[in-house]
Length: 180
Image (cartoon, rainbow, N blue to C red; front, side, top):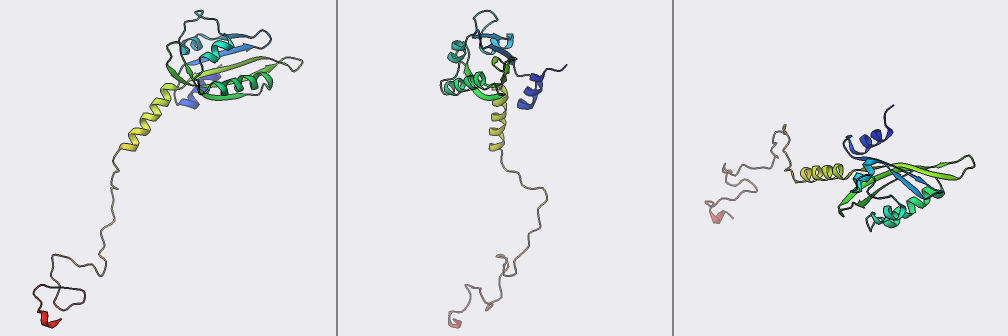
């Protein structure tokens, strides 16, 4: 059975080379499970740290932290599917742009007991897109290959060909001033 995360990655980035991590949050015990890829995106080796909500929030970009808190709160209370593009800081404080997709799962009584989802690191895809956009903006405009032949307007005069003296709209240096 194909991995649904790979389909999401291909749809978002146009390739399947972006790192995809899985996560699961157990609401009653307030515990997180991360896949190996999710540890890697955050700059850790599996088992090096214990994932917690506090750790997750500490690795959010300061400008995105409040939105992430709202996202987690909504997932835990409403359980609806969610998605978010935001930035995280890995263990070396490098910025990664990620897309998080998930949903809350309810038990038989309707209470949300778990939140599961995927985190996709789209940093490289975003940089490729931005680099391509910059290159296309700085390319010189190419002339069209098939141009319409130049048509002369009826009142257009060839400056190399002298106009007959006395023709309206013409001036000649050799014209006698007495004629004026």
